[in-house]
Length: 92
Image (cartoon, rainbow, N blue to C red):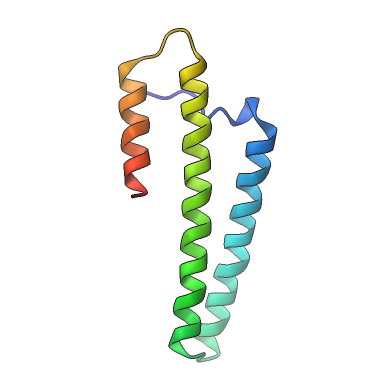
């Protein structure tokens, strides 16, 4: 099983992920407000799409960091690679 995301060794990647998740958090709040205010469905769907993309991109960054960490290790375990591949495919 993958032991690390690699984020502890890459503060820049961690910052990017946090920023994307904060953006998604704000966008989700906007979606909730739009629903409560009976906004047009096109506006709601557009905002939901933005939230989804922000969360997906954050997930890809986490997986990318974990892959880089895994590939930099001398002892790469097949189980780690398989798990990372499965995680990556869950975003497809």
